[in-house]
Length: 151
Image 1 (cartoon, rainbow, N blue to C red):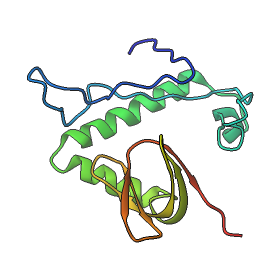
Image 2 (image 1 turned 30 degrees about the vertical axis):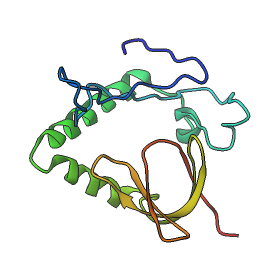
Image 3 (image 1 turned 90 degrees about the horizontal axis):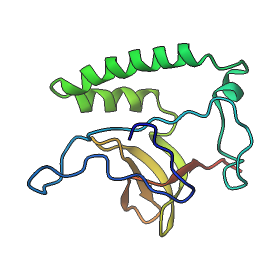
């Protein structure tokens, strides 16, 4: 996906894909990281939730430094990921640092429905677990998840 540009409404392919026999792979061939460095000119549907590096840091984005730090962290976590229990270790670290992972009221806007519930951690693959008001645990693989504020 080198130099990949997606048009509005495009969807990314399944990152894991299939092997030469047609079976689903457990680990992806690639992953995609997108950063909005400077823009604050977002379409109306993103204005409330989208941000940029410059907006969050209140300083001009240093692209070289950002890429250097990103590469260093990705390499570090990739080595952990490849180790025994690596995915579990990364999942525990993410859960510990996350403001979303546990006990937060959320709205998840999925392709064909919107669900409301409370976060209950993550799956081994990083998908968010949400307990609905009926007590059902839903696994959120893709969608827009927003934390709901108390009124």
